[in-house]
Length: 485
Image 1 (cartoon, rainbow, N blue to C red):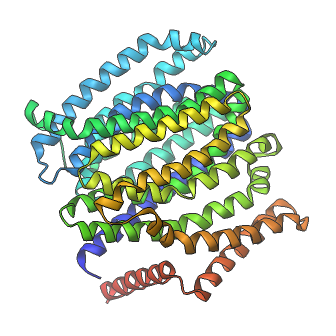
Image 2 (image 1 turned 90 degrees about the horizontal axis):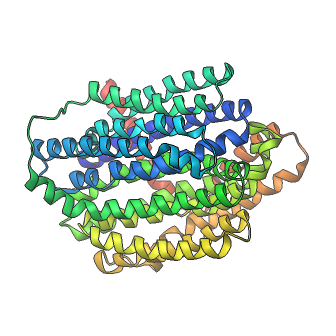
Image 3 (image 1 turned 180 degrees about the vertical axis):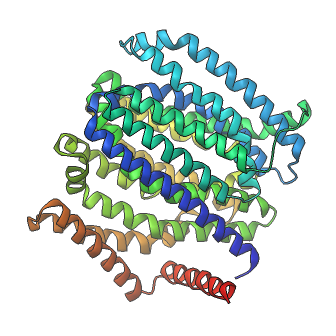
């Protein structure tokens, strides 16, 4: 294994550890808070985060990706984007502060005004740390994310749970999110070597904007579209329905973000560095699809199969209505690595215009599906996401038939072993629900049985991705052993 491969794998491991650690802690905290707080409070905070998440896109997308994609980025680029982001975030927050009473009135809950204003401060913090994050990604120093994210997650977890026990209600959720962002930002500024210089270039900024605005528009479309589902559930139905819908999404996202975001953040800078070598980008994209689906598919299949005992054990009976939604979301998220790999390849090749066109097509289809199902029921709204997800696979893969000579049918062929093995394993795990055991024992048997079945099938059919993972582990262990000697 050459130095470049080692660097990629090392950074992927750091990113995975960061995402896994923070998401596991956040999930444990959410379980504790779900037991302490009523579902309606989660619904109320979800309504607020619909607004802040959409505004957050203006900070987190576009310019950061432009810095990563540009091959010869220097201090002047970073500093120009930093000052632009900071001013822009202050303007966004001021607008949100003024609009907060009107937003709360729209939700028919005046008590949300201070909540919106306090949570909106996360926008300003993002403006401060956004370029730092881009610098870490560009220079492949992902261990910095590990310490910053875990520091913020742990500190905010302690504060959030303490406030919930003391009866602060919705403010426990607010302060958990706010302090997480604040501590994360502070640690990045203390540990990352880059700091802004007193320099600014409109010409450099314009060049970055010409690439980044298309990605910003794409991310904005994606976020508005995803939050639109939540917004419709909260307005057309009830806060409780929204709470079940969001809580069902939380556990699959825990798994997805650990793997998918790790691959996503490492893959873009790696592919961007090789953007002039079409064959290299193709093989990297192919390996990313094969490896990530091999890992993601069984996790989603297993989670869907054991959703009911898991929800009952962790969240209690009051959260059982979220089980059908969770199973649907698991099917949707199982194919996310395919989307991620294809879209990163398109971005790395400098085709942000094509990226935007794809988003426009996908979101038009998704909104049509939402309009058709929104009056039928929340379950059918969730179910429509499977249909739109399948179409999105085809749409995202289509450009790479020409860009990389890697068409969708070939991608599907690469994913087929993971799909078949995961379906067999998921079916076997689901049957264990009928043994009549208590929830804890059922989950223990399902977990061990599922892993055993998947590994056994991988060995039996000599799955390439399984062999590759073993070789990577052996190389890492061998290197560690050599270093100790």
